[in-house]
Length: 159
Image (cartoon, rainbow, N blue to C red):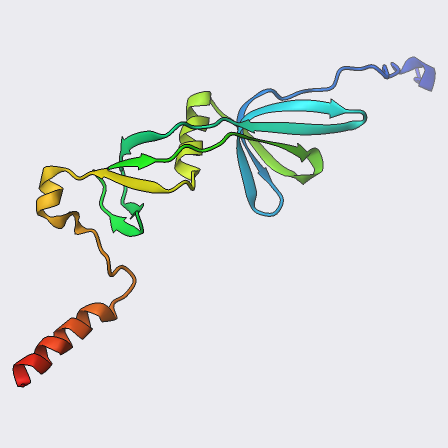
């Protein structure tokens, strides 16, 4: 038997739309990403995703990987302090979203911490690293610096 248009179910205008509420990394156009708690919000006919990134208090921790601290390249194992960061909320339109990667709160917080751009301050250096001068490199990115010192020594010996 052939179906007629009257036989198909009609859509309810007040039909409930799918929503996403949870922790996630949201990647958007322009090579940007936001990490936080994501909620679907409707403003009239516009549906937006609200991404709330929580504030992080000032905190101290041990570097797990080498990183710039106070403008110097510093080895892993050093105790550093990261300054507090303010929380932020953004509203993103569905059309600009490349993908949403759901995750746990712990994974989101770790990603927020590792993507943080607040300045690090040196707190303490382990005893063994202090004896080895921690290999803090003031001349990072300046390979000519060592050569100039050697040239100065050669000139002094020649005099």
